[in-house]
Each structure stands twice: as C-alpha cells, then as structure tokens.
Length: 127
Image (cartoon, rainbow, N blue to C red; front, top):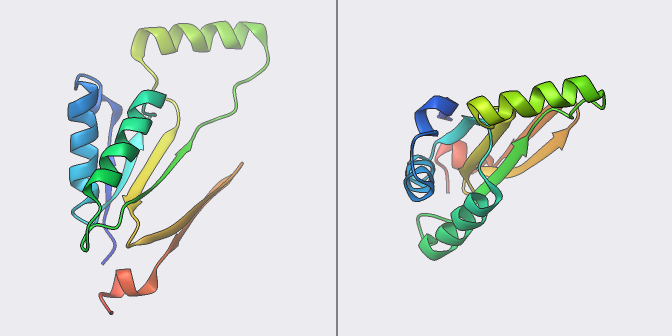
C-alpha cells in the first residue's frame, strides 16, 4: 500500500530547522511519501540530504526530493504583492515531495504535472 501524508505549512512553520527535518525524515522512514505545503530553506534541504546520507542502512536506502512551485509573474505590481505576502505569512507557495528511495524511483517535474515513478516491488512488498 502506498501512503501519502500531507503536511500543511502551519504544522511545521513554528518548528526549528532541526525539528522540521527530524519530523520529515521520521515520516519518510515509515515508508510514507510526504506532500508538504511550501518549501524548505536551501540550508534545510542540504541538512536533510546530509542527515539522510548518515542514516542510510539496509532498511533505509535514502530519499527522493522534489520541490514544485509556481513561476512568478513578471508584472511589477504582482511581484511586490507576492513579496509582501511571503514576508507576512512565510513561504507557503509550492509543494515539496519527499519519499523513501525504496518506493520512489524518480520524480519528474513538468510545468503542468508531476510524474512520480515508483518501484513496483516496493509497493507490493515483493523482493
């Protein structure tokens, strides 16, 4: 069975970077695919990957990570408005997908869709 767990931005915005990363990694290590509203900071993404590499073993093979966010408009008024909203409520735009490498083979981003390719045996429990 494939399990997707949605994490709204307000559930992680008050957490420290370390606790945010620990929470996300803990969910992924339970063989769940995280769909998180918003994005991690670049330093958090780097730390998440580093922590993942430290924890790789026979059961946990690593993660696949993808962030999708809308292309900003080029109109000056819209850009100012978006910057103010981002400043006031945080970086809620976009979607971050994080999943175990034993389940997710590859994530492809296209402008209008996300393709999540999975390992068949990871989904069906076969070896």
